[in-house]
Length: 209
Length: 209
Image 1 (cartoon, chains in turn orange, green):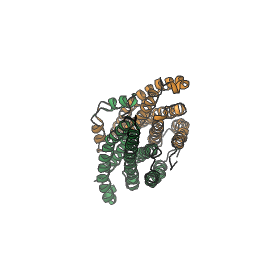
Image 2 (cartoon, each protein chain N blue to C red; image 1 turned 45 degrees about the horizontal axis):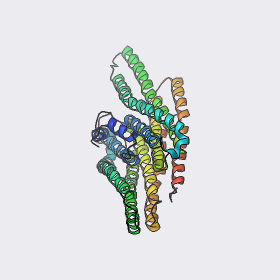
Image 3 (cartoon, rainbow over the protein chains, first blue to last red; image 1 turned 120 degrees about the vertical axis):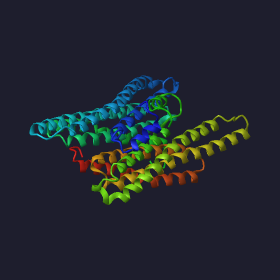
Image 4 (tube, each protein chain N blue to C red; image 1 turned 60 degrees about the vertical axis):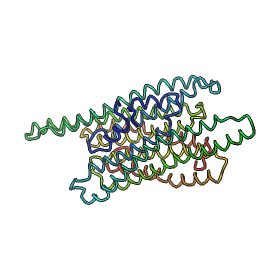
């Protein structure tokens, strides 16, 4: 997060394993949360939207919190990914080493699934926040509500793939099922995000909506 | 692009009009292009994927170009947005001033629609690139192809709203129809992106896919 955007994009495009899709998903969730924040900033205090002040103030605070969580998860993703790589590099010459390596891999995969699962929860909540400010948003920044929903949707969909790529490799199928089950609960926000974008486009009155 | 990610997110979340949804959409397109680049980097040279070398090399080059275009459009968006604000601030005391202001606003709105329209074209092409590398991508980074598609989809959907918010305010309806018509051509890539993500999740074998 202390890199310039330009450097980060260069690193993302490079053949280094991190940053990768996990960090990209986290940044998209943070972007969605930041845009929710912007819309609330440009609505709060405007007498035309006084009726929505309570909702906007709550959304502003929650969006700032979710943005922090998302940026923390970008770092956590890198650490969890590193742990998986480390586990695969453990020695496997003896039966005991093989068993130890296997257990370490499984543990690391569980950890690597939980980080994008937490990101999916954050992204789903950003979608809910975008929904909560849709009616009362300053019309001058209504389009930014749609962009916030699009960004959070992308973060959620990306996080889902990043969860599943780890849970499918788990030998503990009941743990995998529990993680996948939690993920499924968040995924309903994908359709909600699409409805937000459609609602914004309809209100704007675009020809393609 | 020379800001740190942390600073950029702070600015995005602030009540300043820029950066806003236009810059966020551009960054998501650049993120998608960068991830396509990463997948090609981690596939090219691996003998297991030798059959796909030509496609991967072409995609790598094109992705780097699209990433540059996307980052340029982030700056162009800010300039075009500034021109709209300036036009609205022109004097309107006399009939002549009113007419001049009106014409300036219309011209600025046309410019402000064309920037996200170009971004929509870039994002749609990033989706196509992600599709082109789907079959031959190193399986270790297959999930990143889905994240690239998700990011490009979000950029495209966001760019569409940003086009329409300007074209609906155009009094020249034939120009508006031309811009909206071009946009509609790019929007088919939204469904293509969804199919990429679904294909990746199916290949990974996630429970929720």
